[in-house]
Image (cartoon, rainbow, N blue to C red; front, side, top):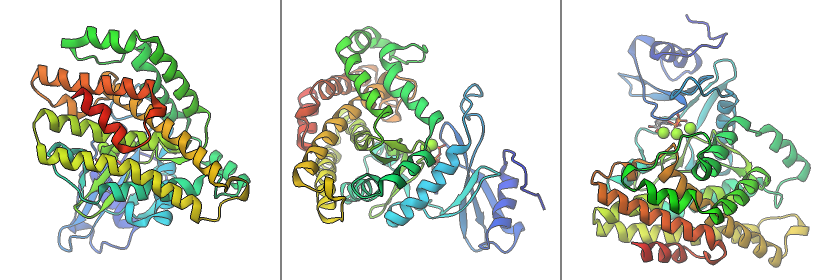
Length: 399
Ligand code: ADP
Ligand code: MG
Ligand code: MG
Ligand code: MG
C-alpha cells in the first residue's frame, strides 16, 4: 500500500489507492476506475468509481504551482480553506454544497461527494438550458452562508479569529491583480483585447481615468472590508445544477471581504450568458434569463433583509435604519463589483467561454461592446442600481 505520509502530486492510480484506503465506501481496489476531470487553472480533480456498485467519490488536490503555469506559485493552504468552507456550507445550507468526507493536511487534498449528476451552470447556460429555481436557490445560498459570518450575528472576538483562520493572501492577490488592477493598467502585460476592436477597448477602458478611480475605490474595499466570509469566485463555473438542485463548489478564494463581491459576480456571469443568448436569438432563454437575473437581485436583498430582521442580531446593529443603511451599501458595492467582473472577463487574462466562443467577429465585438458599455454605466452610477430590473434596463438599452 502506498503510504500517504509525505506530500506528492497524485496520479489516477494514487488517487484510486487513496480513496480505497481512506474511505469505507469501496470494497475492492481492483474494481475501481479513476479519471482526472479537472478543468480549472489551479488544481487536480479525480473521480474514483467502483465499476460494479457505481459508488463514487471526488478527490481534489492542490499543487504548489498552478496547473496553467509553473511560474505561479501558490500556498496549498487554499485547499484547507476550501474544505473548511465547504464544511461550513454543509452546516449553514447543506442542500447547496457537496458533502465533504475528509481533509488531509499532508496530501493537501480532500474527498467530497460526487456531483456528476449535476452540470456546470456556465456550460448549461451556454446551451440555453433554463433552471426554474436558480434565483431562489442562489439567493438563499448567499443569505444563509454570508450573513451568519457577519458582525450582525457572530461574536465579535470570534469573528476576528475567523478572519485570521481564513486569511488567504495568495488567492486574494490573484483577484487584486486580475480583477481590480490589470484591466485598467495592464501593468503585467497580460490583458487580452480582442484584436478587431482593440483600439475601442483601449480608449473605452484603459484610457478612462474616472473608471480607474472607481476601480481603485472598489479594490480598496475588497482589501479593507472584512464584512463576511465570502466565496470569492462565485462565477457560473463554480455552480453545479440540475433542474431542481443548485450546489456551489470551489470556494478556494474565500476570505472575509465585501458581500457585494459575491452578488456582483453572479450577476455579471449571468449577464454574459444573457448577451450570448441575445446574439444567438434565443428568445425563450432570454425571457427566463431576464426574469432570473431580476429575481436573483431582488430575492437576495429581500432575503437578507428578512434574515437580519428575524435573527437574534447584536442589539446595537439591529435597528431598521442600520439594516437598511447596511443593505444600501451592499447594493452599491454589488453594482461596482458586477462591473469589474464584466470588464475583467472581457479584456483581462481570464476570459469566459460564453463570449470567446462566439465565432463571428462582428457578433463577438457587439457582445463585448454591450458588456463594456453596460459595465461602465454600472461602475459610474452604482447608487442607481437598486433593483434587478435596474440592471436589466441598462443592459437592454445597450442591446
Ligand atoms: P478548480 O479549483 O481547479 O477550478 P473546481 O473545483 O472548479 O477546480 O473543479 C474543476 C472541475 O472538476 C469542475 O468544473 C467539475 O467539472 C469537476 N468537479 C469538481 N468538483 C466536483 C464534484 N464534487 N463532483 C463532480 N465533479 C466535480
Ligand atoms: Mg473552478
Ligand atoms: Mg472549473
Ligand atoms: Mg478553483
